[in-house]
Length: 116
Length: 111
Image (cartoon, helix red, strand yellow):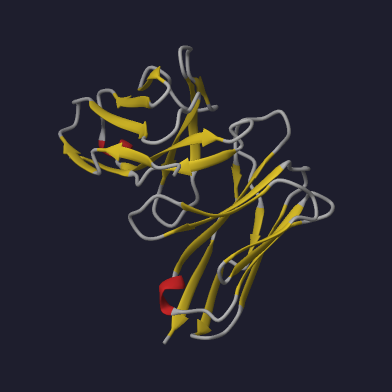
């Protein structure tokens, strides 16, 4: 149980285009999902907390107009990187909270974004 | 942002040896989680701890939630080559949805 999927697993795009990444909880409902970014050989950096039916909460320094988050249902959250630039190239990972208070997070397999 | 102090940063061991890594925090946590991440993959949950003093095992892995609620350790017994990867600790403060992550321990197991 507690499986989280992400799509796509890899994406290459041209600078200036937008890319949408989907995160799904496959066998449980998640009122809260989280989006992380990970640079090579570094730990995970939380970008935003996504709550179903409400606006996402962004971490300091993360541009909400650049990284659009939509949590339309209890099993789906999407992250759209708008007008992507090479510096947005990274490994994006989502997680979904479950348990009594959502205290246990299960992670998706990640999406490798390369912006040319 | 806030991070946990995770040590050691890296370990090189022989197959069959036991491994121990730990995390400490200046904050009190209500939850401690241990994850393993393989290259190009998302972190996989190994053990979740919810109460101070709790000792939990998952196969060859054992983790404990420190009594002070400011630390946790993970032990791996009789290591095997597939234990290679990066291990992250993560903690959650009471009243917060967010996890705080350690910087990771990179484990290399020599056959």
